[in-house]
Image (cartoon, rainbow over all chains, first blue to last red):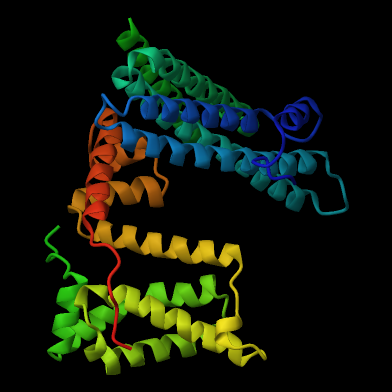
Length: 193
Length: 186
């Protein structure tokens, strides 16, 4: 399994296009990492006029590191689940079903984490959109929208990967992240008008 | 909340000089993780060697505290003692002299990071409790704004600004700390 922080961009994009390597959860984590980077950029560009800019940039960088780590976490979890779904072997069906369930649980847990992170990044980017300096504010609003898109994507993944129904607390968590991110984007857009 | 303010290094050393046993316990507690991390992560000593160095460091601190010229410089003094004893240990297992042993750039970087981490931990300890709490939750426990908001009963939209303000306090505390000091007369 490669370290996705060290691969070239064209290599990474090729992996997304290839079969069985990385999937949508990793793409969402990558999007969150990019959005966090934009929020950091806006904060750093606004140090002269925004007292909290340094602290916001530090938070954004920390969030970006977490998101980057989740790119690989999701790829690992997804590959394990993918392999288990295709596995046959001679093990007892009940045991195999149990193992498959465990792997699918993990494959859904990572997107949940990506969703939480996406909502946090959207909120931070919205703050940067409100207090950042004029020329870079639009980048912050775009960052909030990117992060919110990622939380929307992972809410769908959680729903599909687990086959969950309405009322499942994991789905509720994913949707709460999505809702928080969308509200942050609305605030960011409002402040930009 | 409600904890008494932590003693500065200089105040702690002064109390040790006066023979306060609680102060000795606090001094060991304050620096033990740092000393052990330098041994294990910085110099990559095995558990037994690290334990020997650990014991020797604090034995020397206990017996030679009177040689320390600047009470506030106890940490650089302990750092120096630890590094010297680690080099002695490495040399005893080879044919080299301690002065001949060269650390890899990675080890040097690790030692610098350990020093930085210790500085941050000390500065954090004197921040107001709410700041310690929120910084620990965000940076150490990787909690989201939503989780912090729910567990501390704070509006979610204020978390990022609160963290930023606490980081400013932390930076002020780190910048306000004294620079390198003289260490001991050894």
